[in-house]
Image 1 (cartoon, rainbow, N blue to C red):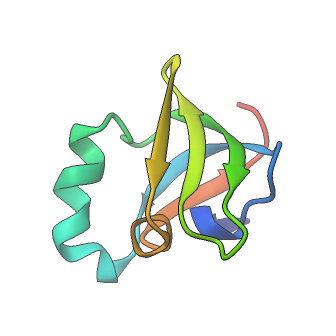
Image 2: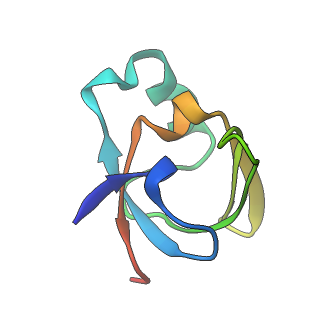
Length: 79
């Protein structure tokens, strides 16, 4: 089942599936940061108000704003 990144709980792993239609200006930025289709990640922590979300991806940590996380479609679970 596809969700957006902001809907994944802390400690859960997932895989990037694509982008929402509202991704607009964020799409290129997220692609440049390595969040391409099929990329595995794990949610490390989420700030108390849900912004930002920190994930581990490609052996580095990446923090995304809530609006950016809402544009990233993901599938829960390891590959």
